Length: 147
Image (cartoon, rainbow, N blue to C red; front, side):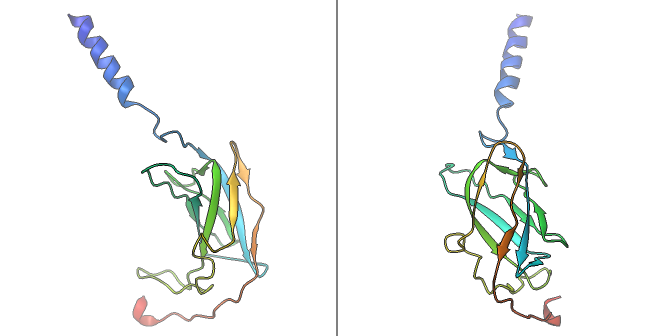
């Protein structure tokens, strides 16, 4: 009888330790965003998968550093993005506050359906070519009410 419970407990442990990524493990992804040839410090980049992954929402995202460089995060910080084809949403907040900040790109690239930006993530390390955008950048000053 003792071995019966050991077998049941072992089966339960194996059953609960399934694939944490539900078949969509992250692949390392890094890149850079340049706006008019300059690093897009603080720009937000979001990948929207073009296929159907069912009810599970998988949305890789990143924020660009001082040099406009980014490392995608999906399940945990800097873990990458699952392989596949993505449309990209890009926005460039004028400043970082607790409230929403105006987009210095005036929302031109914030909709993945109309941004015109795409990427394919392959198995293994993905060092993307720089995302280079030519666009009018709004000169937005910090509103002290939004600090």
